[in-house]
Length: 438
Ligand code: NAD
Image (cartoon, rainbow, N blue to C red; front, side):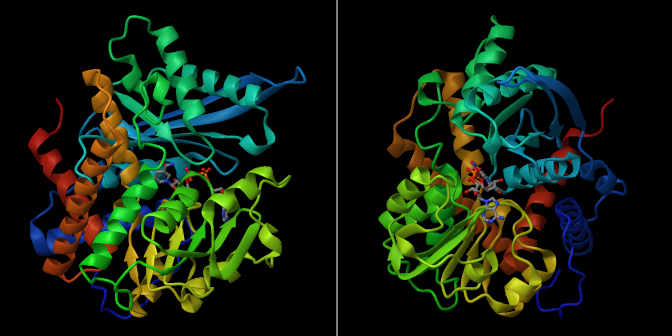
């Protein structure tokens, strides 16, 4: 676990295996350095407590019937409800959703939220489906995972390929099938404002990441980066999280957004790009891509990730920063807003290069934190101002950041290892306090 040990590890490309490795190492570390861990805890905490796999039909616009497979994995019931996003992507499978659910448990411990982790998903390609087909898919998927859902059992939120539209439909389906459920709006977060969504939820993951970055820079924890004004930023992924972080860093912190990419490729401009103008171009382009903006050269993912910048923000998906990319990367800091973007070997290389890595379970916890605020507002029948949401979010993110820094300092760990040790330690604490039923 000690970041000063020479790098001897094998590169693990499987996100679930990487998550389990990180967890097991954290348990070993806690056992050796902090307090004894009871035998069997690894086996207990490593397994999700409920795995729902559903196969269901959806009528397509041309009248044909397609079958889809969906998942709802609830990882930990240390606290309930469980919380996590719903992903629509052709890459969704049991292992990916299990890894993401596990990550959610750890993230909730880092952010100090009273939730267990869960994750849902459907294996589908939303880019190739019509709005009406996606609505029917969302309704049927919601119906299929109904045994798990509930404001005090399992509360989904948006993730890759889903948005407030799907969350609104999930709420409507749940409410129609549970007409007498009190606080039914608390069954899902990231809903439209008109259905009880929270102000600031759409930008929350990015905003929370910006607060963590701000804290790290303010406390002079990033070698080679003393202020954010004019810092050069490259963003990988230009969906909800990627667009919002580019926009927040540009508008609120005066950063230069020098590079942006999406699944079709990237663009780079040393003088800086205007995130809103790039998004308007992407939305209008037939390819729905940033490629071609302002006649800029089309760059590959690899080229963009290794282009000159101070801050690199992976905001696309897991397993994107591999060792070959880490070796050539020029950034001073990686703000991990995607889940699991960096492999274990790439991480070791970055640490050896003295690059600061702000790990996903800390850096992107702003999304679930504002989801928690939304759930509290729904239960209390309240609607908070945006300034109130942002103020509470900043406080939560700064506290989480400082807790992980303190753990890192106390035990001489890098930030990712410290975040795992902090989270796993908290999870074990809850487990010991609750005991084993019956
Ligand atoms: P999204 O679907 O809105 O956007 C994803 C973007 O990534 C799209 O622009 C897509 O083109 C791009 N992309 C896909 N594959 C790519 C590749 N190989 N290279 C470059 N770009 C690629 O999804 P999102 O909600 O913005 O989520 C992005 C990441 O952030 C995911 O890892 C997600 O789990 C994580 N995250 C999201 C939230 C949230 O609140 N939405 C919260 C925490 C973490």
